[in-house]
Image 1 (cartoon, rainbow, N blue to C red):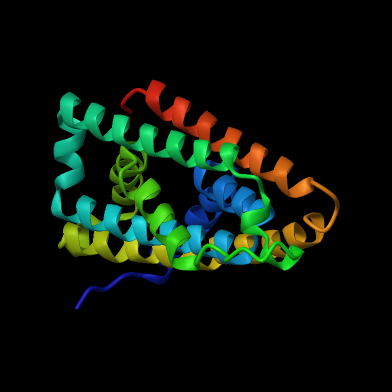
Image 2: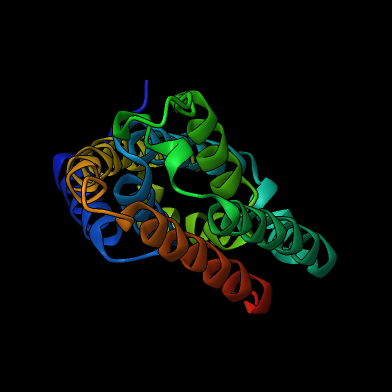
Length: 214
């Protein structure tokens, strides 16, 4: 059984929440998609990002992330894949007409299911090597060597991190979706929201492509 002290968990969760609410690629993406495409998109993408955090936790606990950090080629390949995926998401937003994602506006189009955005959020997070290296650098700072089983402690802390992102990303997607529904009722605001979301994803993709290892 993995044991963790209350100060250890409390300190970790405080740091995790502060990091999660600080503007970054994941929460900005959730916010933008919620505004431009509604609650299902925002919540779905946010939950996908959270599932990606579980993946990074597993990689960190098993030592896979350390291997990626030690291999420039592996890092570059993952970085390229993540950047191209973000650029593709951005392009999808730019070429959309806004209407097909807002069936409540009376266009008669079918909404994109939440599971699609969940998958997109998961992929965007899971193949981002910068997130993997963040977990590798962040989680060990809260591992107590005196309790042994560093891998098990890493897994526990990573699971707690992912769990709190479910709450925060879910809340951001929910409330951003409510605001987005109101905004899309104003003329062609939906198209502009899609354009802004597309530019955000493209910017994140370019930023990732130019990123260096920690």
